[in-house]
Image 1 (cartoon, helix red, strand yellow):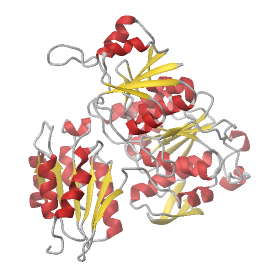
Image 2 (cartoon, helix red, strand yellow; image 1 turned 90 degrees about the vertical axis):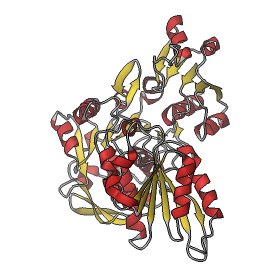
Image 3 (cartoon, rainbow, N blue to C red; image 1 turned 180 degrees about the horizontal axis):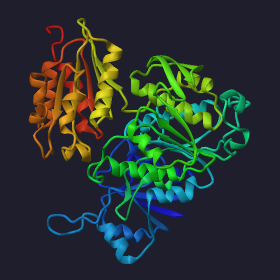
Image 4 (cartoon, rainbow, N blue to C red; image 1 turned 60 degrees about the horizontal axis):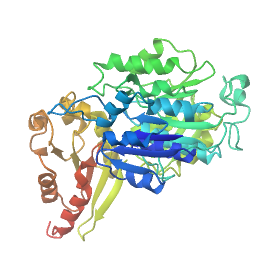
Length: 494
């Protein structure tokens, strides 16, 4: 069929477009400010991209319009529609659907879906799980909200089955103690998907992940987020329980044992096998530092992870991925071994450049962190790796809808505790960033433009510093601009 995707440059919709193209469909799409890296990836696949949401695109007459959740019925200040194409679709009465629903009907149906949900770490854990299955020879399909460096693409159809590898577990009932042979997953093609709790579309306010019908569901963590669509934590917990309701009795729910919110979700009802991780009494636990640790199953050593990643959050992500992979037949030992070659995802503590000098280098990182907890775990992970002797300069913008609303501004000083200096881009905020960061005193600086921000950071940086830039958007290209500014500095004099 021919599908035309509204909002095609988002990570989810762009991945959907790549899957549809791989499946043989004709794909076109539109977005406002068609931008890389997704635009480059899509054009390389031969997908035509149109700038804007003009009503004239109705003339393409696709078999189906697939609508991203960036699209709404909102009006501009002059009363005209913000998305004229959507108005034209509704007026004409032509077929349209949401991205998650199209994916469920045309890609996920007939597959063993492994869905990774959680407030934080979804993308990284999805990439970890996919790499474990790939390393075991299972050839999974996947859709990740980023670009896993091991694959270089955000989505593919795949073609493997659950039990098709020499590295899968043998005699599972004897090895793990309580998994019966009859409960093993069927030989369905595997598909790993990042399962977002954000709503599906303006006409479908359910969370995206309700459409995915997973047989293996990872509940990585759960905090309040998305203040633009959820009133409180209880509202998000309700959506997570909707996900749990869709997992079959022969399925598995992998749950973070440290999270009280997830305990409440399961107490509302669970009809599937449960495997916990993280807490002392959990099924899967870790013993050792985050970069080098033993994996224990019910107190017994079953594998060892030695890798380049740091931070307790990544240790927990690894346990979640190992527990999920075990459900489709990969031994914890094989999973742990696969993680040794895991390369993470673009924009997850990705080094964007290093400025060298005789006095020591300055390293600039890019990270997707935007929720206060994610900011804290990112900074803490870097601190754990570099030790107390080097400075961390945290450069961030509160860009998500939740942060723009100021719902979590009071948590920012807490999230930045391990940084030596913090620099906030306050452009577009409806609240006072200086007031929110006042508890940090002189350690926090605020700028209302990227130019001013770069000037503040480059004037303060000195050899040996680690500068981590955190945003869930492009951050105005701050990384390159900052590297160029630092290159001009006389670092030797500092």
